[in-house]
Length: 137
Ligand code: C2G
Image (cartoon, rainbow, N blue to C red; front, top):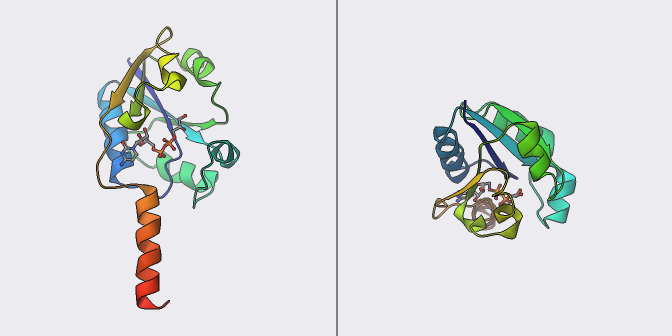
């Protein structure tokens, strides 16, 4: 039973998130997702459109996801690896080489997967804003 762990805000879920979750799960048998809380997003300077509980509800409905836990700090990751017996920590390549994940290598394997090009929550929000402006709403 190989256990995988990933983290993120997963706001306005899109195919980039799904591609990450699908490939992460394919590396093992059980996928734990550390979902950034609204308070932690403030620390990350990120404002999610959907609050934590709604983002959690959506993530829990995805076939690749076995457990969603709150991500409340940068520092909790080693404890999470131990608590959930994690074998591999997986993140998108935008995190590649980050000390926030490289420091985990003595506790678990760390794998960065290529980020899905052309899609992001920021891009969705921007495009929706432009659509509203064009349509005059
Ligand atoms: N992702 C991706 N392709 C995209 C967009 C996102 O592969 N087009 C990946 C990211 O690399 C990340 C995951 O999907 O691994 C979740 O993305 P975000 O919700 O943007 O997560 P982020 O804000 O990077 O939070 O402690 C780590 C942080 O909580 C990660």
